[in-house]
Image (cartoon, rainbow, N blue to C red):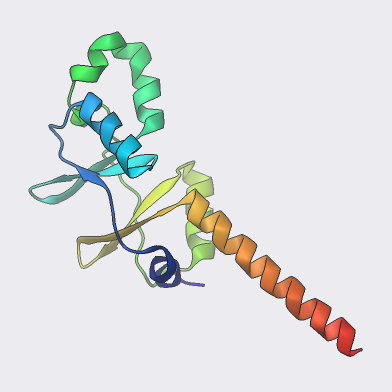
Length: 142
């Protein structure tokens, strides 16, 4: 299965913020969009990615003042990305090795979607269910 197959079923909408967005506004956006991360987009394209985990980890560094700081202070700047042609298996390995949960999908340097670890797990579950159905049908035909 390819990333393009995932995007076809889940859609290509991506919640984004700008680097100067405050952490308070980031948290509001995460809640409103019911997502765990947002892609940080600047004038030159993807500038980073910021997640709930980033907020929690940096809260220890900045304390309550974190809420008024820009997301650029806490975002991950080295963003792992994928393309629609990549396989879900490849992305699963990347997510596991780099211990990341959200990967933007990029086409010709432009943001084209995002895939979460939940999307990958859901895809795997569907594949396993199909395999089980095929095996049960094969056995039943005897």
